[in-house]
Image (cartoon, rainbow, N blue to C red; front, side, top):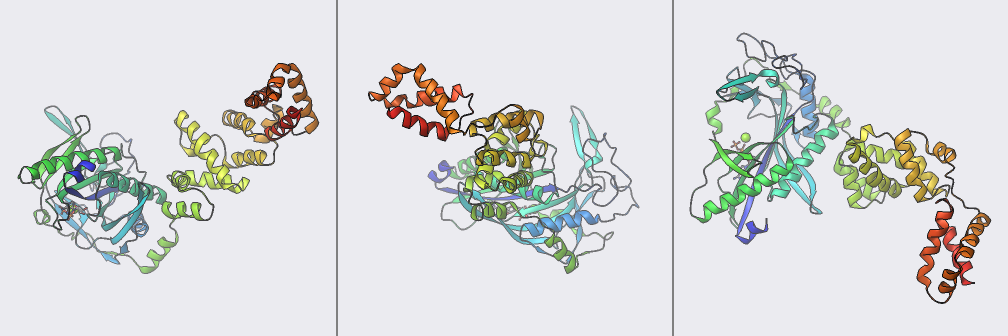
Length: 480
Ligand code: ADP
Ligand code: MG
């Protein structure tokens, strides 16, 4: 990054994200979209492009696309058109892909997210619907084609060339994934190809207005690789320009093992595709009422939610961002806080114990064995002084293992905090008379020994003495 600036260059980056919509059936026919199906199981005459078949638009796919467009602040076109994008590829049996061209469903939006603590806004040029192609599996000297993916609905979200660093590019991708997962229109599984990023990269001298020639890096399947691929590509392009060589407009692929990009093909221009409106499909007419209905159904989006956690609940920005990464995690936190009415304590427990245990057990928040109301009740027990923070950790572990209610665990294990002054005094007296030498030292000025006494008392009480009271009474007694 800094090397790019040190060398006097700036990068210009625009990203195309292909979002696989989570519909039950395909974009233009009733084939299933289940990922694990057997090879070519999810096919029909429509999806393998038999002549004479006709496409029928999937209404849910259109609605999911509109929701995504609205969440990205886009205008929704009331009359959009499907076009044929003509090209030959073995996994594209019709010889064209049904996509949208000059009249896309969504356009002119933007998205704002945090990069290094600062707000970054990236314009969304357009988001259009299209169908996916099949998948070619190359085996040495022959290739097998699986058409299960052919015809799966995609929403292609095209950004403005507003991104300037590899880090911003990765954060942009993560934010798009977060939004479509909040909307529940895409599972966001990069490994299964449910979300694919094409990164367009060019460089220009700092201060120059004109964009350089762009190179497209296709199908990168992790956001870390998005960052690395772009880093590599920026360096490669600056080297070429510095040497006075030309950048070729082309499509490149990223090899994570070698951490470099290599040329795949020179890039076609739009006119090469001979786009024309698909005569088999009527324009998509979206009534205003439908747009407003879908708008009213949008969930609170991650950025709004994070801001609410900060402004209304007093959480630090860091907590708010971590807790809103996933909608279910934010729900879990809010449910916990609803029970115990302590936002920061809920946030602390969720961000540390809950996330750590989930991580260790390789589970996500929806599989958490502790219900948010149980965690909330446990926090209430701490607040009321019934248990100490230390005992709470024991209760938490036990809840995790047994799923029992916190108050039941406290009762069964006799974990109640001792807040009875005379009981604590008794323990302290015993500890002091067993350690007379240390008491004399303390009184002679070695006040550092205080911690030793606290520890001994807590141990003698099996961790159950109220620590505040222990401190207070010990101080008094040690004065002598
Ligand atoms: P194409 O027709 O080659 O796909 P588009 O104009 O549709 O090109 O742009 C594709 C993506 O490339 C968009 O995300 C856009 O923001 C980005 N882009 C366009 N020009 C440049 C450039 N000079 N450098 C980097 N990105 C660019
Ligand atoms: Mg394009």
